[in-house]
Length: 170
Length: 202
Image 1 (tube, helix red, strand yellow):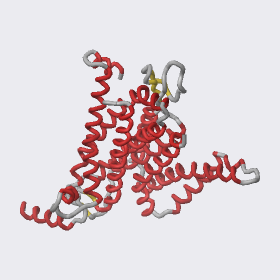
Image 2: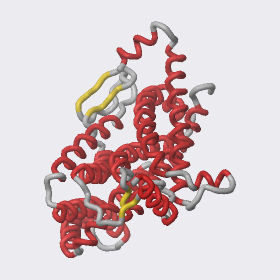
Image 3: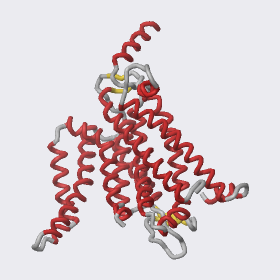
Image 4: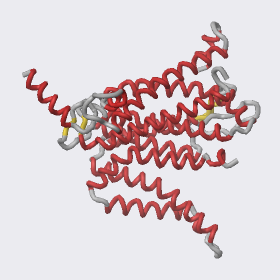
């Protein structure tokens, strides 16, 4: 991993490299957040016809259409986050502990667990959302969507708090 | 022909209660080998990740400050910065889950359902019995140190898990197998969250 980063350091500073990486992670996380939120709304509050205001149209959106983007976004967001986590462990967490920001440390520790569980569920999530959708698996499909949405929302918020402590622009 | 199909699809769309915008089928769902692999992977990964994190058994330890990898678990060493175990837990859970899920695809479904339910119950009951035993031993006035035994809790959990997974009907065990997919990660996360309480109680 270090050999890969060394190549970049010939062209940009170490600080800029990690900022670019974190910004890419953030951008993908925003897209993923949008996709899981829209799918959760479509699954939890479905309507039969797309009509009326914006919310009604979102509720009537085809939930199955979000599956591929979610899987495609979740994996690289996770991998990029795992890469940035190396920097977090030495550059961010140590000062966090020194300043006594234990809540931030604890919530970030939980983030690593919840995103890992989400990764473990991705194959099943993809399987249950394959066409044609079976009526018997409607409940499990719904809970998988909710689980992924909670994991993405939690990770996004906690990541944002950690970034405020020491990250891009902090 | 095209018109007939379009009309049929239109009726299906209007008659659905869920906004899935994809045809659903009401015939009994036969889970393919890929499905068995995916479901078993999800359940096994969650169980293994929780257990390995709690026991702190990573496949390897990474020292980010010096870019060094050690096999299995290594305590922090002077001058090498903080160790990272997360990658090691992920790797070991992932490999373990792939192996178990691959084996699962060859098992008859009823066996698979019962074996999964048995393992999940064992993983949940063992620490639960141990925690209860420790709690009781600390509260009662007489000597009940034997209740803190890992093996006593394990034996009780083994018997209870075997009894429940044996007695339960095929239908119930099948339903439990599918629902374990979200239930096990949620329970695992509850355990992991509890183990982080020291951060929130300082």
